[in-house]
Image 1 (cartoon, helix red, strand yellow):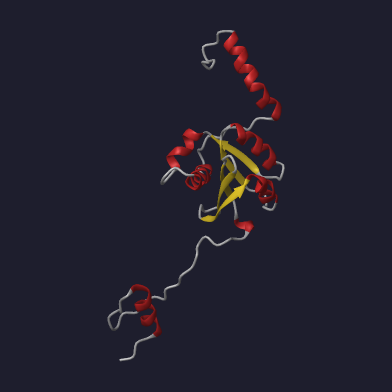
Image 2: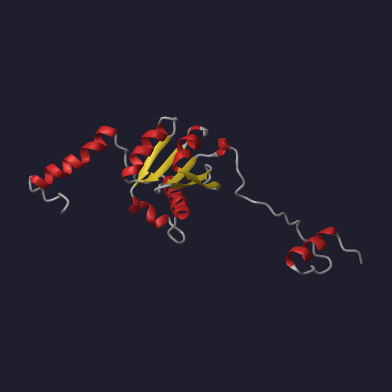
Length: 175
């Protein structure tokens, strides 16, 4: 009996030989997270850190396209090279600045409160898992987003907190 080339590939990859008369499909090894065309990116989740940001991009169907670490100095260069898409980040003080800067390139930037992102984290809490969770949460049709603040509005928040604490406001932060 003569064995086909498929059988040789099966035994090399899986360590076994299929019985006679069974046709085995061709196995193909590929990296499904290859650098894809930037035209297919529809949503980007970005986790902000001190020096290195984690980016997770997905297409319209939610399939991951790329996962990348970007240094703080390369963020604007990275987003300027992409066509307009949805960029989502967790809400924090720095997110408002990055939202303003990234939106200048024509991207739609949305901020998500951390309590809405947490249910989407699938594994350990790290920057890559957070970026993926942010990207997935942003694709949900019923997700609640936070509008990012202008520079003036963001600068006036400490003044409002100081004023409310002087007036004895019950919602003022305790110091």
